[in-house]
Length: 592
Image 1 (tube, helix red, strand yellow):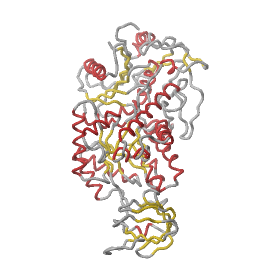
Image 2 (tube, rainbow, N blue to C red):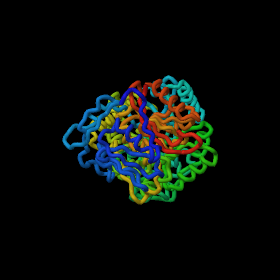
Image 3 (cartoon, rainbow, N blue to C red):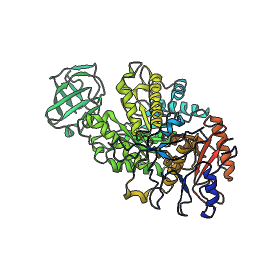
Image 4 (cartoon, rainbow, N blue to C red):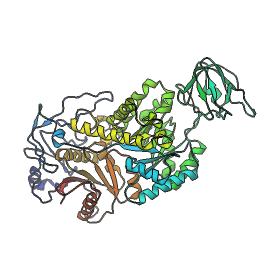
């Protein structure tokens, strides 16, 4: 390619394919060309070939360094294809065909991918000051989590005001996630900590109007607790910090024997192993908090203790009826939710794997398997997943993580989770910035290593069932083509122009090896896109002239340091046309 801008415009009609192929041959010599039917308005340029386009199905990657994920538990696949030739620069890749015993193309390109997964940080007393929050953003925080189990609306408003002030400076665009308290069952207040030992008899009661209980009795806030617990059930305090076996019951008391001792303090969280409380998913307090979030224009709601898809649908309908476009994420943390995972995730805008409470309600050895299943269902649905709880728990107290915690973060990223989350580590831990730096560094390392090795499925498209292919967004074909072009050309970024965010999410679901720069005229959408894998969202005003809009986009990337002169970028959109005609396009441009 010479120094002029080279453009691949995939909306060309068939009569113009000769000139288009001539332009493409400067990038893909010795390449097979597949022209889609006219209703697709696109062409895929492939080697040997790696994409085949069918009328009702999205492209299937065959001979590339992508590895198809066939089942959630599979990690191995056939060896990826290799390139014979070395890319001479980011913008001048050469392709001379495939062989089976040469070096990976990404190794030859020297791919140095940045962190693609996002990080959610819980704000608490240690980090609520604006300078502390700005330091978290500078260290790698993408989304601020408000835990409505703690703090008043006034306190949370002060945190939101700080986020708005930070965003207004232009360096960061932090999203805000409101996490509802949910129908928790808690013990009552105690005058002093109670130490319990293995084998000790202990009573849990719903009796009211008692001035003072003895040292072996604690009241419970939930009246139906007596009906939910049965003889033989295991009662867990704070997810298993101590546990009790129910030995007998009365009309008001659950008498138990301590299995694992500990210290009981006021308002401890109670679970019954394998059971969910008979409480509504959205409590009165939750509705008050949700309305507060609407007033504050938060970007995400994490709905706690979801049991049924109707719980999610009810909240989404309420938000839409009130003109709120915030995304609703289902927190999977109850035993009841496990039996309806596909239905719940299909209705939700995304999910959070809340492993603390989940591990208290199901066998702990099942938690990693459920986590993997949730991530895979959501990847097939093109929806985001946050993996949360106990990611770096030891760093609440210590300045360095355990090796198991590092492996935990690594596994979550390699499974394909869009985000990982810090809770107590940043809310009230002794080392909030160190823990965030560890998470960001590990997540970046995983992506860099996987991009270079190309031996697992992090950068792979997910296999899709033929049963739901017809229901897929037709733009998914274009998203796969853009991702493949970006990989083969080793471009600086994929630029996506979007008004509602759907197209940017589709491109993110294909897991390209470069950043996805999502440009939109909607400031609120910018923050909602902060959750999605690899997406760097920015606000830009669209012009009626497509070339003017593209010029603004290139200038923005140069200003942000996301590209430089001589780089190639892939531009993909369904709106860069005149006269209100919607045409799906892909362009490859050289930055000058």
